[in-house]
Length: 153
Image (cartoon, rainbow, N blue to C red; front, side, top):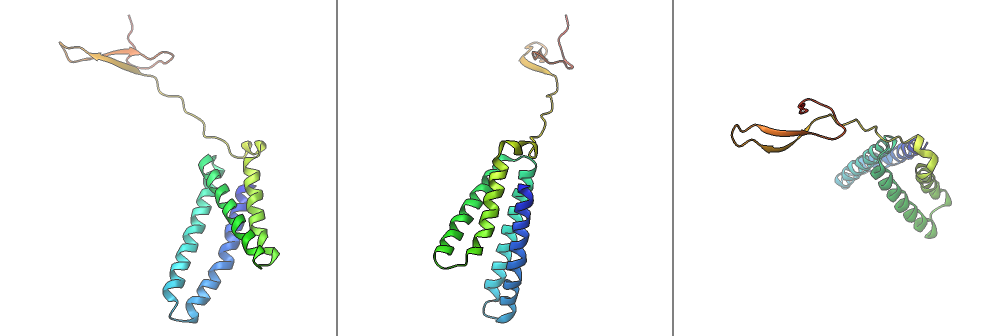
């Protein structure tokens, strides 16, 4: 659910931001460079957030942490804007992001963010030295593992 909230917030942010930037691009020729840079930054930031949300869905703790940091900064920024005169509905996006962050850190959310299964390491041997006469490896079996190269008496 938390990942879906992040995807919806990013999609809404794109739907609201890109048309304004394109309108600024077409309005005057003096701001073409600035509007183009803004468009690239908005698209890049949105792509980063979508990637982090996708990684969080696969169980990445780092992605979950970075999204929590982004949600916190967004909340602080929006709170300052509301205090300085922005409408109260400006707090809906940060509220959704905080809800997504809290949902992702709840203990019951572990089912929805499974850790990758660890594959058993292949059996093998450990080189303990080299035979000075022949140059062959001297190996010993690793404890608890089976594999080729096990020294058999």
